Image 1 (spheres, rainbow, N blue to C red):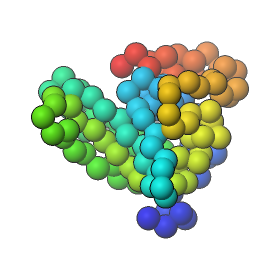
Image 2 (spheres, helix red, strand yellow; image 1 turned 135 degrees about the vertical axis):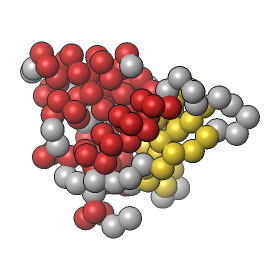
Image 3 (cartoon, rainbow, N blue to C red; image 1 turned 135 degrees about the horizontal axis):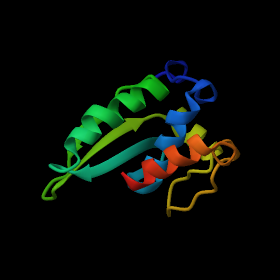
Image 4 (cartoon, rainbow, N blue to C red; image 1 turned 120 degrees about the vertical axis):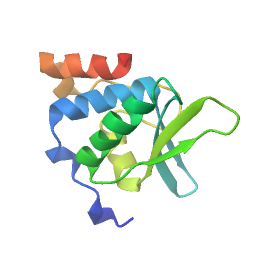
Amino acid sequence: MRINKVKDITHANKEKLAEFLGIMLGDGNIYSKNGTHRIVVTGHCEEDYDYLVNYIKPLIKNLFGLEASLWKHKNKNAIALSVCSKRIVENLNLLGLNAGPKTMRIPKFIKSNKIYITNFIRGVAD
């Protein structure tokens, strides 16, 4: 994927971005190794299917301009949406979400607005 195909995250809807960051903190993963850069959101194959396909997948498309791929984990009751993009991973890193253990500093823009805080918490909890 060419880097210019990814939407500039600085122009993203901040309410949706706050929720997406919460989703990533709760059910997401960032993989960045050996030149591969990917974000993944995982859920239960039955309980979370509609949420992943009908809500998170369009959210990713809206925020980043890229289609997420859906796949099922072998021998597990889990499905995942994934997007390979170095630019998305770099942007999420700048916002405090990194590959590895789930630690994050909440971005200032989220702390500055009650709606953003609510959306961030919703993303973590859903």
